[in-house]
Length: 229
Image 1 (cartoon, rainbow, N blue to C red):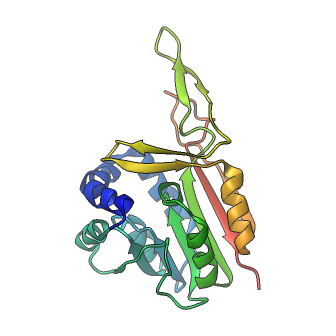
Image 2 (image 1 turned 30 degrees about the vertical axis):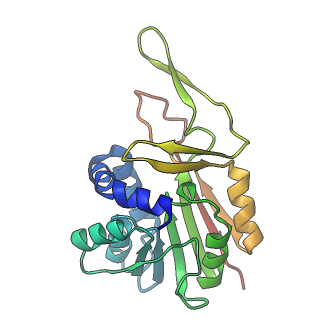
């Protein structure tokens, strides 16, 4: 088994428990529910569905949703939490078992930053997206995620120190277990998706942090593309 997939199998339970209570996760769920309020009867692929939270949200908003993930343990948790939905153990880095033009929306939330390379996944997303369909992906914001908060002597946050932005970097994280994070600049993602044939629709950098930090610094980058005829 791929070592990255095994790492997520090992981390699945702790990650899911964290996601249940994290204020940032609560923000994402509310944002996605509002952004995708118009998915009634649309075929949606939740690519890298994890514990099924977004499969649930998109389904509740009327979508006909398939959740897929390479981690068998994540799929197991998703089935435990939300057993009414369709989940499949699929590695998006390989050939995906879906027909051409199968989905109105391919939704990929906080996944692309955890896999390497991403080229095949993006190509497969293009293949399985319908003409005039959408690809939505989100990542932690590459410009600021690895940057360090700087505080004064009163422990008040003043800024974030940005470093090592342009050069891609692979590093191990220990938040939920030993999982990999692949830092890449924004241009890498946008160019890779555009090269596959998608057209950029919208880039969103919502305010997530509260006044205890700096609300004007984004935590996430949300991007939506369209597959033209």
